[in-house]
Amino acid sequence: MPTSSNAAALDHTPVIELDVSARATFIWRTYLHVVAAILGFAALEVALFSTGLAAPIAESMLGTSWLLVLGGFILVGWMARGAAHRAESTALQYLALAGFVVAQALIFVPLLYVAQAQAGGGVIESAAYVTLMGFAGLTAIAFYTRKDFSFLQPFLMWGGVVALVLIAAGTLFGFQLGTFFSVAMVAFAGAAILYDTSNIIHHYPEDRYVAAALELFASVALMFWYILSLFLSGE
Image (cartoon, rainbow, N blue to C red; front, side, top):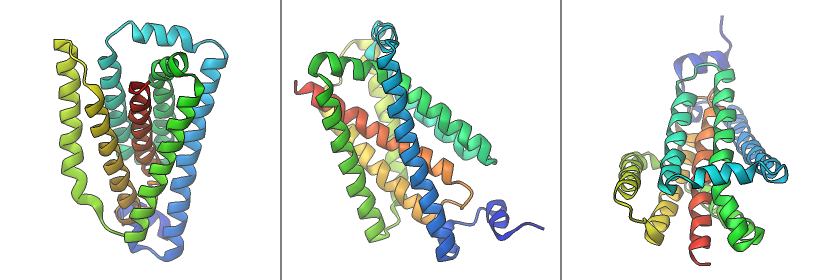
């Protein structure tokens, strides 16, 4: 006979319908995994740059169209999210999260390499601080208002498709997307953080805290990417 936790997992009861203790535990686990993913990402980048592996990775990726790297960045996020949500077991959710962190670390290498060469490490730190402040502010809004931001889903779906179409068009026709595209993608990432946080509060079942963490980490990574891109465009 399943426990109450297993029963929630089997019928996918949203965590908001559970008791206060279960909701608090779910939220704590989710954000603990988000922090672990961020720290894991940072540790991988430090390892890649300190061992000298970053240079050949960056040079090989920069040898292709930069827009292909951008497209890969978005597609990897979609694939990892889908894998985490389809996974019924916690172990498979962990596998999706770990694989996504590694993939993001590799995809970020050329952008961080250019940032370090063009402006030094300070610009990376500044972009990281701005991203974390934005993430904290949006999280506070979602938790304070308790508003259900699920209405943002169509916007996010179509926004993601439009972004991929623009990236594909830029690759085919050889034009740059420019600063306005980066600004729009920062706004898109902010909306995604609101949507993800709302889902954590209102819609996730309690056995999907790893999938919830992956979703949120993906949105934070997206925001960091385009904030750093904006910092570099001003150099």
